[in-house]
Amino acid sequence: MQHLVDTDDFSKEQIENIMHDAAAFKKEMPSKLLEDKLLITLFFESSTRTRSSFEVAAKRLGASVVHLDPSKSSTNKGESLEDTFENLAAMEPDGVIIRHEFNNTPKKLANKNLTPILNAGAGNYAHPTQALLDYFTMLEHFDFQELKGKTIAIVGDIISSRVAASGIRLYTRMGMNVVLVAPKPFMPDNDLPKYENLSEVIDKVDIIMSLRAQLERHKAPIFEDYDEYAKEYCITKDLFKEREILLLHPGPVMRNIDISDEMLTDKRCKVLTQVKNGVFVRMAILKALLLDN
Ligand code: CP
Image (cartoon, rainbow, N blue to C red; front, side, top):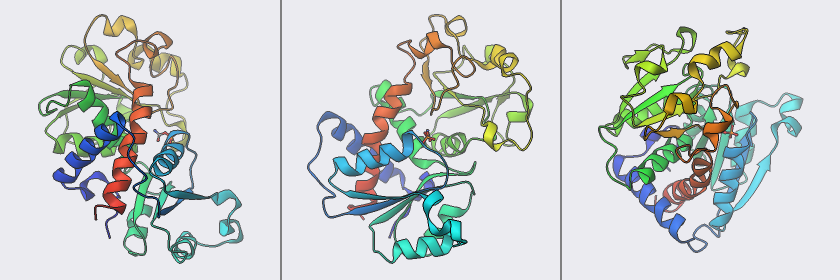
């Protein structure tokens, strides 16, 4: 039984196959490969993209999906997460897709080996399907040439971001150069090159991944005024000028704080392409976990 807690659960060969399958699915919808499969989604945190993308991906492949809304579940009667999960697993689904505020929840449930666990975002630790769909979007942009040696700047609230955490592990493993741009309170402690100003990296990067300030994860407000923060970290046309840089953001975008309205409609900005690709990449991931294993 294979789980997806983070992208290192997949070998490089599996990642290549997922990229290949996603590209093929984007060209032509496949037949109902997962017609006899049933997935349960269990989202303890809000989601627009990930939950609906997983459901669309599963249904495009013919699988059934059951949602359990934790706010209306027996969690309210004091049932533990482990008991909730074991009861769902007793119904013999083909996988449980879970989002949770704690970093170790997907791993803890995966260790029970009752049903495949698909991590849809855990704390600030990992969001593997987002990292893989972002990787696919970069590959597609560069015509499926190797991304080895390309430089990506991750900009914003990096320390709170599970997208950044999974992305850093995946991109460095695939041979990309990763640099971090953030004010000190948003900067994690690691060995990657670090900058406080976008102007220092703008001529050195092929890709910029902008991130949202994750106010809901801050124990106390870090900045009083995000308009001041935006003056340095918002991605604008004035900053990009005519440079051929690919602009990504996992969403939700805080308009004119993360990325300006003008840049969101610029052809170099692929925010909605990421969302579109997310369905094909999640289809490929579901195939890898439920069919190819
Ligand atoms: N990118 C992402 O995880 O978005 P949602 O929180 O809307 O799922």
